Image 1 (cartoon, one colour):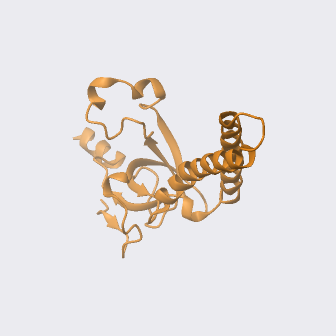
Image 2 (image 1 turned 135 degrees about the horizontal axis):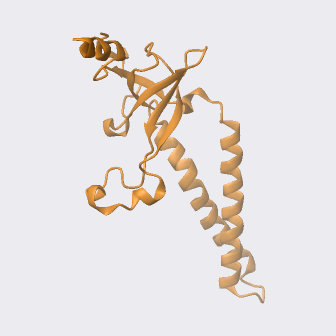
Length: 178
């Protein structure tokens, strides 16, 4: 059986350890990348009440998703692997998705309020229109950046460790023969 393999160095330096995910390798591409089946991350993943609440079960929390993962350690189909985005990528993407539209919303509201203050239109209506317009512009910027970065390898998770599976099929078969 193969021992646990770990990446040399620390390519995920600064990441929070509980952000890494564990999944089962279901397929391997010719370029070495893996398809890993892992449970979906739900809104309740780190909540203390998750075991009794059931909120996530209505949102697909118990289903698995299959994710393309870069194979830096030579994992094979059937292995259980730990994987995550490198570095602070998840934080950067979160800032892009949440902060940019918020900035657009606020900037649009302030600009329209300033431009429309001498006009007969209500300041509140101008502020609302500016907020909606600013949000839409920022949202379009996020969509454009998303499409531009869709194939960026930095946005593909990488295998951090190959975990020793509880039981390989050949070991199970030998056990059953005894």
